[in-house]
Amino acid sequence: MLLYMLARGCGAQTIVEFGTSFGISTLHLAAALRDNGGGRLITSEFEPSKVARARNHLAAGGLSDLVKIREGDALQTLSVDLPETIDLLLLDGAKGLYPEILSQVESHLRPSAFIVADNANHSPDYLARVRSPGKGYLSMPLDDDVELSIRVC
Image 1: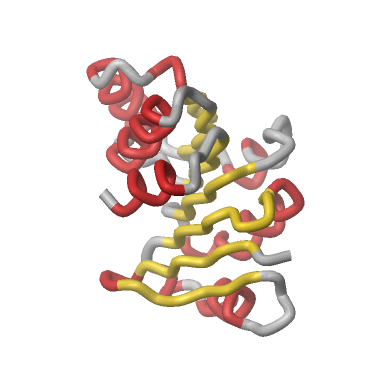
Image 2: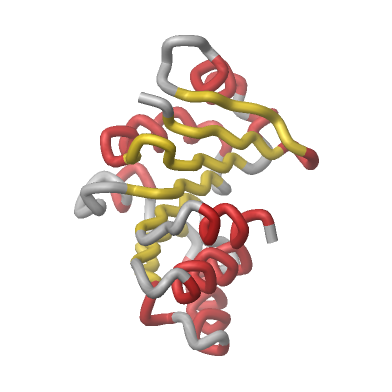
């Protein structure tokens, strides 16, 4: 529900997700895009079996048209053909890659874009970056090891 609320609240039109898994968070984000009048969600997942399940969930939810699942290593799949501006970034994949994924998409994050990092406590380098003054973010931990940040450049 948090993801849906954030995406709706900021009027998100473009969302990037690292770590599709079975597509549950993807469904919430895509539903927010639909309710915002449309948009585009680019998501990346390494495991083919999870991609198949996510596609099935999106089809069952009638949201496939809003989502592009990129299968493979996110360091490659999220390094090309990104939207000019990103309204919301969800980090929910391999925790050690959070700093690199953020670096890849950072130039596309619009001012006041939300960044949600699940289990961020397992990525101390990521936390150091988004919590450091002067790095362009305001950040705070939420329950369940979620870090919520906003781009303030």
